[in-house]
Every structure is written in C-alpha cells, then in structure tokens.
Length: 428
View 1: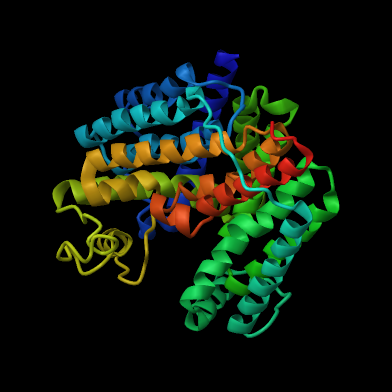
View 2: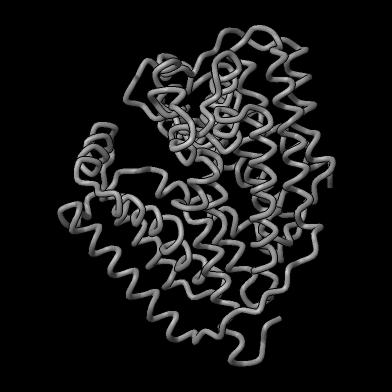
C-alpha cells in the first residue's frame, strides 16, 4: 500500500508540473508564476526525497481530525512549497532546503497528535432541539444582515473575470467589519455544518440547502474560495468512506482525478480556466507565496506581529502587513494582499522559530478537537466540519483561521453537541 500511495503522490506532482508549465506560466508569468528552465536532476531528486519522506511515516487511514489536517497540509501546502521553487531558481537554494527540513518536522508533530491521550470533558447539558432553533435563527439573522449590507439577493453568479472582480470590489465598498466576520463564519462553519450533517446522516435535502446557501454567498461576494472550499469538503467526504480506511490513497486519487480532468478539458478546449481554478488557485499558489515569503523575510527584518496583537508593545516594523509587502515586492501591486499559509505567515513574523511555535500551537488545538470528536455519534460530522478550517490554513494565518475562518467555532459546536447526549446518558 505504501508503494501505491507513493506512486499516486508522484502522479500528483507530475500533474501539477504539467499544469504549471503548460497552462499556468504562459498565462500568469506576469503575476510571478515564473518558469526559468526545467529543473536539474539534482533539484528534482532532492524535492522528491522531501515530498515522499512524510508518506513513509504517516498513516494511510483516517481516525481523527488531526490526521485530516496533516493530509490537507501535506498535499496543498507541503508538496507545492517543496516543488515550486524548482521553477523559480536555477540551483538548489540552501534556505529552502532548511525550510523543507523544518516543515517535514512540523508535519511529524502534527501527524503524531493522534497518539496523545484524549482529554475528558464534562460538557454542559444542552437541549438538542433548542440548539437547532438557535442555529437556524442565527443563520437567518446572519444572512439577512449580509443581504442588507450587500444591497439584496442576486441569483445571477459572476462568471468571467471582470464580473467576479466587479462583484468583489462592489461588496468590499459596502463591507462593514461585522459583515466581514459573518460572511466568513457562514461560508466556513454554518453552511458547511448543514452540508456535513446531510452527508453523514444521509439526509441529502440538507446537502442541497447547504450548497444553495454557499451559492448565495458566492453571488454576493464573488469569492471563488466559497465554492472551492465546498468542493474540497465533498472530496474529503468521498475519501472518508469505509470509516477512513486508506483515506490518504483515496484523497490523493481524488486530487489526481480533478487535476487530470482539468488538464484534459483545458487541452481539448484550448483554455486554462480549470487549471487556473484548481491547480493554480488551490495548490500552486501556497508554494509560490511561501517561496517569496522565505526569500523576502530571510533578507529583511521580521514583522514581529507589530501590525497586530503586539502593535501596542512594538513599534511598527513596516507600514504594511506581510501580505501587502509581498504583493508589492513580487507582484508589483501595492493593493494586492498576497495571503499565504500558516507557515509562511509564521516565518514572516518570527522566522524559523515562529514556524515551530505556530506548529505547536496548532498541535494543541488539534489535540483539543480530537478529544471533542471522540464521541462516536458526532465523530464523522466533526471530522467533515473541520475540512474548511483546515483548508484555510493553506492560505491564511493560524490566528485568522482560528478566529475568523471557523476553527474556534468548530470547537465550540462540537463541545455543545457533546452536551446534547447528557440528556440520554450517552456521552461516549
């Protein structure tokens, strides 16, 4: 099975390479998606060594949500971080070798959270019916507020690039701080919870409702991540069948299928739309941005969170946040927020020690969530609910993922669901 898994990973990298060289670089070279020359044999061998190394130590089955986070970070962050620099530089860069070693160690930490003994909770007694009523009322209030801020409901989706850009800009001009939080909570916790419940309980009307609500959000904000994240959720659910056995193999096979079909259709239709949507947006970009973050903040002062929680204690290091710095320096667009994954954000603030610190914090959160999802009744829903917050780690800071993108809310929801079983004396 390990050999099959490694073979699928090699195919995954090969498909990413085809997407990048033949579809992404020709259209997006001007945006920093550079291809200087084919990587040398030494560069390919070194990269593949680091890419395949975690597979040797990782479980192929999925028993706990922390293992899900491991595989999402492995496929969507770790592999592109290791592979994409081959296109940007003509020789092996020592800084990136060290980065690969450190990220491998971080994956080992995350991948071994499942070995920790679960923490026992004594949840408060919660009435499940009351909890459902509160959830529905909150959902309605949130959507009504978003529609009020955005100016109403629009059933027509933005399709081409100009429509999407205009929709985003129009929404941003009306956006209030509260609406910014609410639309993220809806897209990454409330709606996905409805979808997860429908999938796990085989009540597919809820799946339709959840998907329809995600579609409504997309027509409001024009963010493709609203739809893409839902697609990732469904892929994980399909791979999670058979109680998580051979999850890593099915997950990789699913990703390879999406990339392969995208390449085939783009070739037949002489376009780059699907490769741009899946390969570039979901996978390649985290690797590209991490390379730029490491390159810039290895040669310039670290940000030290002086623009955020430490702003009252540290004088600002820069007059911009790291995403805007990278957007300006590497893309020539001062208005571009080049948001990167949790590891890149950690490096921009505290360097390599920051990556380790953020990983330990994430491991503690995952241990807590693993403990909250021990109950067999809610285990599957808890695992699927965690997909989108886990995916957010691929292009968002850890603190933002926890507060804004739903990871903290997912913990609260699972704690409350544990309390609903106390009425029946069933808190397994």
